[in-house]
Image 1: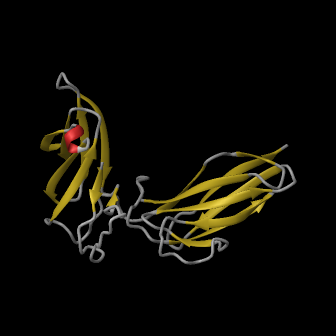
Image 2: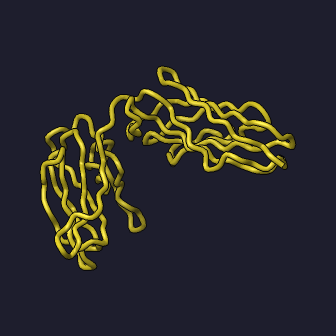
Length: 214
């Protein structure tokens, strides 16, 4: 489930033959309250239902003819979207949700691995997320985040999916895009711990510990 960015919300959307319309896993559209917005659900089930705050919005067929996608045109209202897949017996058997996140409160780090080889070559990719007080990713957060690595490793890169961000990958500072960024830590020749810490003004920092082993 994802939401089509309303044209004009961030600026006019211009599509080309090779482009994809900007569609996001976000139910945070401040200032768009009461205005129409499109919710897309892709499913392998024959029917899907959409709820907003547990109130049924509607039900749609899904098939090869529809591209296995259902689109609901609804006025934007903050809350919790819930999409359910319906099997051939009419049972709701699977669901996904999108909830309106609150204000940015903290940083969350999630490494793709915690053990690295002490060969001065091994890498760990650490996903950086800006979350609200309940741990929901804030999909409109663009906080500036600073990453530091101490111990038996080093920081070699930071980045995000923002194509307009032209700052160096080697910079320890990176602006979150859609509430996320990434850092890359490298092992050294020495065994021991590697601590990766991310901070941002006004947000609770987070530190994760990796191990460099032979």
